[in-house]
Image (cartoon, rainbow, N blue to C red; front, side, top):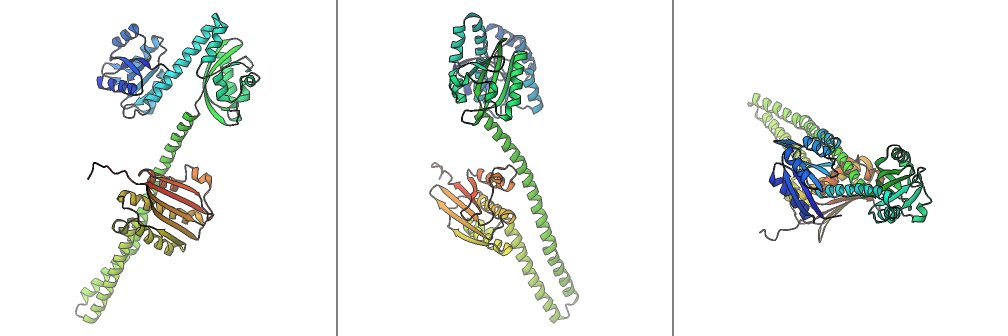
Length: 481
């Protein structure tokens, strides 16, 4: 791809325009540009020069992106038009794409800027190559084959039945077949069941209308399914040309983003529910245990107040009040410890895990086998995250494992801290590990991710589940004392 770019920037802020240019230059592009901020300036710029790329702000005092797109379409330009906005909703974004913008970006998140520009430039080059190939047909069959052979993406030429009559080397690379093999095949031979119907429909579309563009699943010779983006054009009544590019990595990345968004939504709901359940539990304990105890103390104090002359009985009542007060203090300490154990802050992670494991044994009857080593105190945030992951793991064991023994290992490593929790229960399934609905697992992963750590789930040697958490040691700043 040519690294020289002549850019028209539709922007009322010189600083924002220069920022976009700097990003392109840092990516290795040699950039020249002109900034305009009104319709007359844009028209003059389009008439005066040839442009490789147009970047436009969404809303300016004297100009709008909708007006800019109208001028762009009237000029019949074949140049990527990308909108960069300070704030825009999904509805407006869809309207922009329908109006002819190639993509849109938020000024607050420019991570996609360079990939989007490169993608649009590449697709525009492909379209121009298609036009060049179409023009070449009328002048020279030899030149036509030269364009095919030198095209960077896979090029397929099929007849009206869908049989391949010409392919280039790139087509062989992305399909895994030799040229000789491909020339004995039809389009349908590369289509798996999942995309067979839509693939045939798209071919019919190019036969009837002259053009087609779609993302489809294709079958590699190895049997692997790969995503391709296919742009097709009708050359004449018996020949149909398509440019094909493997976009599997991009598709998978998009699917991962969609999955992450769905998991985040489920996690947010899970955390809200968990918070409300925790509040309900604490409220119930305060009402049932502390409330009753304090009511009893109040009644006994009132009795003492009314019978002060009876020293012996009053003394007995006061002793009972003191005993109930001590019990109430213990209950408050227990509730407080379950919410946030003081041991974690005072004596460290290993001691807090040992205390909670003992409480877990008393509550469930499961045996906890501990192998705990003191780990460096890397700060409250890391200790709390590891403790919460540990709590969530034991909660999952209670709910799902049907286990009798839990093995807990805490160990410092040269480059971090590892926490391993195994049980001898039924074991976790791969479906549960990869499911976006296993909210306990998602919560553990998210806690670890927030402190740059990882959580891995697998079958354990004890036939149950094994959870391995690793938190890297934070990098110390040598300039800080």
